[in-house]
Length: 313
Image (cartoon, rainbow, N blue to C red; front, side):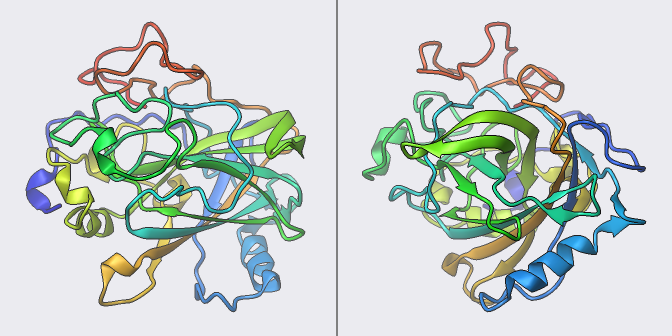
């Protein structure tokens, strides 16, 4: 998607409260992976990078929890590959969970849950919701994905707090920029392929550089969705803080071929004693127009405003 898709008509609004100091309940410390993304990087190197985000033995609060949005569904599967055959530019997402109250030490066993839209802006479970602009119907994608489970899943952090997902680069929907939703859970356990019990320590969103997103949106199948793509500067959740506000550090798999995919990395610092589900919290919750009211679970709030309202999901 080229520059003429940029949406400059939306009013800029900061939906996150970002402060310095030590982490508060529900806070998130996010830092980009500053060294190489080589698959040969060891877990020891990852742990060292995470520890480097601490200050005086305590992580600084870099970003607070935000809304889970209107498209959350319970019961996502524990799995590494969440694509289910969905077409798009490959994305390997590597996240590290650390304890922001204990010198950024790893949190083994933490469950990281992610969900995001497909290349045309559709979410599983809400496939009739209009993503805005002009896009084919989700049913026209012709893949074998389960309409209630694609592009959703959990991974359980290893001894170094690391999880890794295989997915596709998300598309977009009006009035939001390209993003991935994330929750970090602790205290539960895997049962029958899902994660049960425990509590949610953090609810947030991950973001992508505009230049990378627009290069990808010019490719098939993304290019079949035309309209006004909202840039980071005009998004109502992203607050402009870079990696401290959830901006993923990205590295192209092949420097001259965007279609080969990307690797993304972020360190998530949680307070294991905090609880923040993101449900009903600030920062929006407005679905694109046409969101169904009979979705299985996680339906948009009944009082959600229209896409032109000031809040967003």
